[in-house]
Image 1 (cartoon, rainbow, N blue to C red):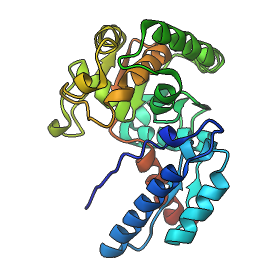
Image 2 (image 1 turned 90 degrees about the vertical axis):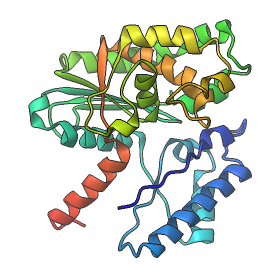
Image 3 (image 1 turned 180 degrees about the horizontal axis):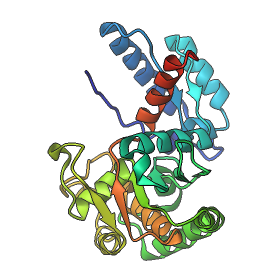
Length: 284
């Protein structure tokens, strides 16, 4: 088994016209070529290639896909925001099982926030909002650390964007289990005292609303360089953790959630599970 990752931060390469810049396209193309080389080296039978928010929402997404395919021979599939939310929920359901009852899941990516709720493997409601940690940092913060005024304005914006989705999700019923996925939530949990990744995926990790509020007051006054010195914060994400924390706090508040449990499985595992299901039932 092999596991490798590279942080793309493509939302930071969106220009004023919401086009992915040449630098961003080149970065994506290079990574796809690298992944293809790794697949060939390991003699994998299949490569599942997909893109999410930054490419999906770029005005020149078709041109981006064409360029990547021309240079690498790989045609990336665009996952819709709803598909992204549903596949992540599938992974969460498989991790916790049917006995977990109604699950509400929150996932903060670089470009979008996904919210889901359901009692089955397919959620009854799935939302994808343009509230990703990288996107909001890129669009709202122009100083390091961000000014109090910008933080307050961003809080108000996030709250407004969450009103309707949260209202609908709450009408579906109280969750038996509130879950959070994504690197952003894992980092926030670590900063509030959860076990490090070295402890393994099966260690229970939680993030509480009071702990998150205290954390925001602390990290919002720090520079990105200072935040990168905190245990559990990677240097390539330290600049966007404040925006991510604001989205997490607002989402939990809007849904009336005081604590989330961190699930180690997310979108990647959901995509793999759906593919395996297809093979199992003769659909692949």
